[in-house]
Image (cartoon, rainbow, N blue to C red; front, side, top):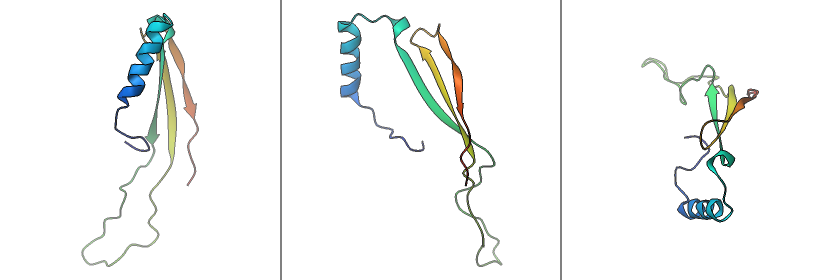
Length: 90
């Protein structure tokens, strides 16, 4: 994972379920949004050099990517059109 923590906030999950139950939300009213990145021309994070070479000049990892957002309600019946954020520049 890049940029996100892998830990789970159980306290926030309990608060969320409490809000849903107390305010009588139904599954069609609960939405989830997630994002992910697609890297174009992704190269290794470090250079690989031949045994007879001592260094590599001008190595810079590519940062070209696009980010997509996906959203739907808890039942999966209402899918929001995917949103695309243009690629970042190096």
